[in-house]
Structures are given as C-alpha cells and as structure tokens.
Image 1: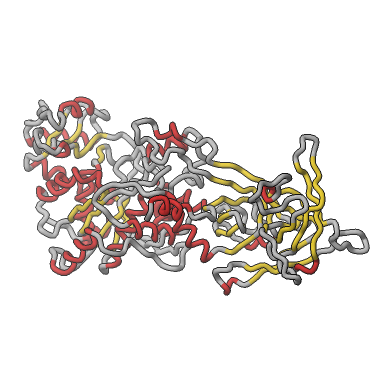
Image 2: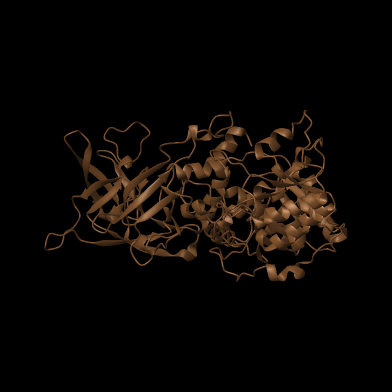
Length: 590
C-alpha cells in the first residue's frame, strides 16, 4: 500500500520561503542527458501520471560541498524543468553524529544556491511508519533479530567470490523475532548486542542483498526525537520507504548507490508498492582536481587545524566557496556545463574557476589596491602654502564591461604606493614597468618617471623618487608619446589598510590520494598567504560578501564577517585574472 503525502501531513513540517543572494534566478543542468530523457518519457507516458517529484536527502552531520551542489542542481533543476517539485529531506538516522546546526546550514546553502524546496522533511518524521513496516516484514518471515556482533556479521557476509554464512539466528520464529524487536525498541539491550536484518539471500551475487541490517540499537539522544527511540533505521531501510511516503517519483542518487538499487526495489516490493513506486536512478558524482570530497577527510582537515573551519575559503564546502566569493550562479552554470553522465570522471578546478571569473568580469566593480606596497614620492608635485602636498582627484571607470556602473573619484597626491614588483632596479630586456630613468603610466592618473632610488642597509629598495608630467592627466600625452606599461597605485595620504588572504591550491597533487596514499600527504602548506595591503578609499563601498576586482590583480571578496557599518578590513582572493582554463585547452589542442 502506497501512502500519499497527505496521509502523513502531520509528520511533515513546512518552512517559510526565504530569498537567496542571487536575484537572477536558478539555472540548472539543463540540456539533454539520460535522466532528462527518462523524465521526458515518464512525464508523457510513464506510470506517474505526468508527475515528477525528486528529493535531495543529505545527512545533517556536516556541511555541503561542491559535489552536493551538482546533485542539488540536478534534483531541483530537472524537476522544475518538467513542472515538478523537490523535497529537502534530512536523513537523520544516526543520532550520534547529527545536529540542528547542520540542518540550518544545509537549508541556508540550498537557498543560497537559488533553490526553494517544496517542503523540508526528516526521515525521523517517519520513524513510526518505518517501525510498523519493519514489524510487517517480521510477520511475513522476511526479517529477523540477529544476536551476532557487527564484526561477525561483516565476516559472514562473505565476498564477491565467497558465499555468505547464514546467521545461527536466521530461522528464529516470527513470535520470537517480534518479541525481541519489541524489547530492542524498549531499550532492554545494549548497543551492538542485536540488530534486525532483512531475510533475503546470503548467497546473492549482490553483497547488499545478503541479509542487510535494517535496525540497530543506539542509546543516543536524537536532536529531534529526544530519547524516545532506542533503535534507529539504516539508510537503506529508511531511504526508499521515505521516498514512497512522500510520493517521490524519481530518486536520483550518485553511482555508489548503484548496487543498493536492488535492495531499494526489494523493500518496496515486499511492502506492496505498485508500478508507481519510486524509481532510483544513478548518475556520476562530481570530482575536481586538487580537491577532496570525502566528508571524513574534510573533517580531518578541520579537526587537525589544517584549515580554519568548515567555512574556510580554501575548503570545497558551499560555505567556504561563498566566503571566497564564488557566486551561486557560477556554480549553477558550472553544474549545467559539465552535465550528467553514467561514468565517474574528474573535472579540472580551472574549469569551475573560469565560470567564476566570467561572472565577476561582467559584474564586479573595480578598485585599486596595492598588495605589496613600495612608496613613491613625486618630487615636482605642487604643495600648498603650508608645505602640504596638494590633493587632486582622478576619475576612474567602475567596470569597463558595464557602462551603467559609471565612474568614481580617486584621490591623488604627491605620495603614492605602487606594487613592489612593478619596479626593478636593473630590469631585464622585456620588463616594461618602472625602472630608473623610465616613464610609465599611472592608471587614470599621470605619466611618472623614476629619477632616484633610496635603499636600506641591506640594499632593499625603500622609496622611489619620481617626477610627473602634469600634461598627461588621464593617461594621455599631448605630444603623442607612448609608454609601454600602465600600473595601478594608491594615494598614501588616503589609503585604507586591508588584510588580504591569497590562496593557492589546497592540495599540490591534482588527484590527491589517487595513488593509494593519504590525500593529506599532498596538502599544500603555502595554500594561504596573508598580506597587509593599501586600498583606495572607494573600497568602503564594497559590502561584506561582495566581490570586487583589484585592478591588475584579480577578484577579491570582502569577508562575510566584516562589520558592514565600518570600513572594510579583510578580503579573500577569489580567482586571479588569468584564464588558466583557456591555457589548459590550448595545451590540449581543444
């Protein structure tokens, strides 16, 4: 008997819709793929009466990562394309590892990505029904209580070339099994002393079908049900039945659940689900170079202090990517571009970055920031009667890709900061930036010429003395002379101090752990570098979480925790300006 969603309305909690940070609306893995072809067929002539309902079922024991984003985009996007709906269901069947804070974080991440679930539900909403169905299987002689410990059960399952061994408790009577399961439920037994197993076939070629565990004893406090339950369903037992209760038509899973599908179907068949029962279909998971997706390894990174938390900008978590300045739309567009496949593969992280860079190039404001400042003194700059350097104001374009972004005023003075690597004392032949006796253009400013260099005791350049040409305001010379380099700058008298985090790959190996070694063996100790930078005053217009292009340097996101009522203090480099993905394609000849 299939239970309609309305029959369990009392178990299901509604949530209020909240808006994300991306007003352009969601895009998805749109296009043609085997899942959409299936949905197209089923919506027109399949067993579901044209209805499409999917679900995204994370376990609330951690934070979502970029791999989950692909599944979210598929489940929500495909359902929306066919006029369907998607449930957000929390698989809260392991009380010792789950927490309300993960529930809240996951909901926030899903909505930030641009998707709104039809309803937010929990596997624990269905614990009573799942328990009743387990009793039904016991009564049919299809489930039994096993007194073996977990290690023995695992050993006796055998292997792909070795048959399994029947449990000595497999042929218990229905009455004894019902009594023992009731006593397990009442909390009479210790953890690990007994489990409830389905009675299928210990010689089945599919290991998942060798009498899988349905319930285990857990004397743990559950964040929703408290201490009511002493037995908890396994994922395989809760999954398909929860889908059926909710009215899911298509259960879209990643490929590691391929071998679980016969068990998924077996449970539904034994409970009398008809031809309109949920259908499980598997697709390839997302793998990225220089990245790990294992929740266990990500937890290790956090617990061992290799990163500053789950929302560290080096992490592949949705929260980490958001802090780093990855826009939700770029993640959705990336998911749509890579598509849906039946075979696992690995995508270059540079491809994801190209979507981020393309988005920000079109949308991000420009600001001048100097990461490694060296002082420039303009010796012929006019001074006021009191001897103070006269202030000037230059006009700079906010975004050359968007005329509507307008311009801004940038203060200019006789004392500036430029990047240290924009100057060389003894430059090589193809270095065209500032050097002794050489003239360069200051962006939106003037032409300047280096006339003298001051150095410290160790020979390090400490200050540059330059002259400027007042006839070159705006960067053009009346006599038509050309310069070969334009550099950015910040007025020292008006500079805002910033802490800036620069990032490299978290793992030096493109495929960490692929050779059987611990992935953390290739952890990059230099993945994060902090700089004390100087910024133009207009940096104050950038809100926490917003991304700006530091001209000539890359795209940077203001830290989400920065005080929005004060001048910015912290930025993270999102991506550089160089299109590394285009370079990879050139090398590959594509």
